[in-house]
Image (cartoon, rainbow, N blue to C red; front, side, top):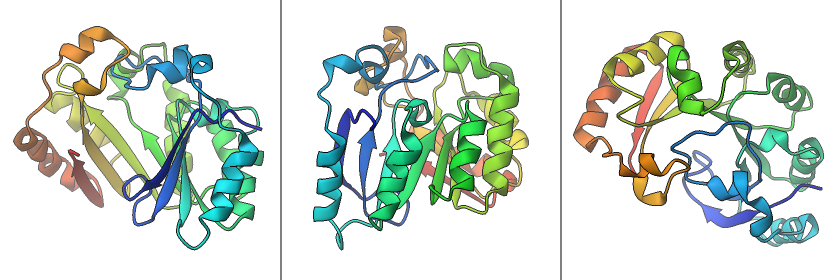
Length: 233
């Protein structure tokens, strides 16, 4: 059905307020230089594949223990049979949290229409002016904007989030994001972890912001959102 290239059997942080497992699907249309899952993009065949049947058997064994499933990647919407996969999760009584880069608003809308998503998280790579630089490819910013609009009008719980990297996200860059997304329900700033490895080896040399600096950015952005949080773990 879909190619499952990784399974974290339990997570207390990937699905806010829920106990979930996390599945990793291969492929991505971005080439973010700071990505720490490059094997999912360039070498998915080198990773073991978990049969879908085995995954669903795992879910059945976790009824009463897990609330939901976080579906991430890569970019999950590139998987051909993603609607059927999400429907299989829902039919077994689990909630679905979807992580997406927002490049495919049409597919996102279809999932919303079919009520196959319960929580949506979208990565905001950078300010609109620097989006293609952060994504590593030429990005259609109108598609990103369309996904933002869809998410905000979906009625679903959601979050926008940015992994903060000094060379891409200075004070003015983050203020530009705040102005762009102003009025959104939830925004998270996430610490960059170069020790996890990066798609572009040069980014692994980047010195991440200190927690105190990230907290200053978080406080700076609070007027733009209903809720802003800092994630450093």
